[in-house]
Length: 312
Image 1: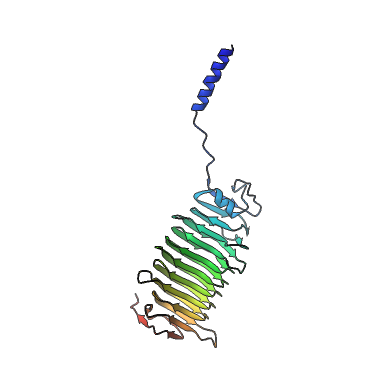
Image 2: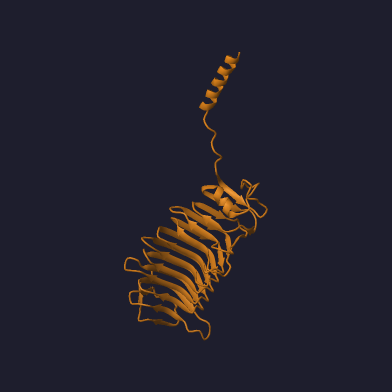
């Protein structure tokens, strides 16, 4: 009898070993955070997480994190493709106290940020510190009180879209585009407001070229509205402004070597008694080109010239 039991046990053991292993719990394509959530929850709509970071950790690559209600959901480090969003009427906040609000190091990945309100501590941190990624999309967001509101400094090839976004109170740069090594940046800024920053937009082609377009946007009360510069004839900042207002900035556009600016329907205004330099050239290897429809006030300094091109 004992021999029969042992034989049956052996047969059952072999059978169990031949069964396929149970699959690991799959990551979800969509997860949720809420003010009443807990990071011990599975991040479903019925059992949401508490913080963006935990939700990003558990969501599948390329998945979506959605805020259910208005609250602060904490800083985030992003290393993979992900969308973080909130529906209309929900204020999904990040209050950064001792570091950057969002760090992005995601080589080759697409990162989308929609509907976020990001507030800083008036210290040397960034609202977004972007080091790598193939595509960054920022829509319906606001940034306030950082050293840099949005800092994109990369050695990778990167495309950027920033739309319906406000950046204010940066004591260094509102939006920084900076290439290093062999990096390139192609950026589109649409309906962007840059207010009360030191530099509104700063494009620096340190290692590779930058091509940026700014449409239907305005700068307001920055020390410098737009600053451009490059490193060489192969690392040029090329910036197109169309329907842009430079309002009460200390200087509207400051152009450093190896930069090129196209102006179409650009208006500069100034507060009474404030001397505005519409375009300031730091060297003769930078150039501004107008379609004849701009309305720049003030002077053109530094020995540069404003050329014309035929508007389409």
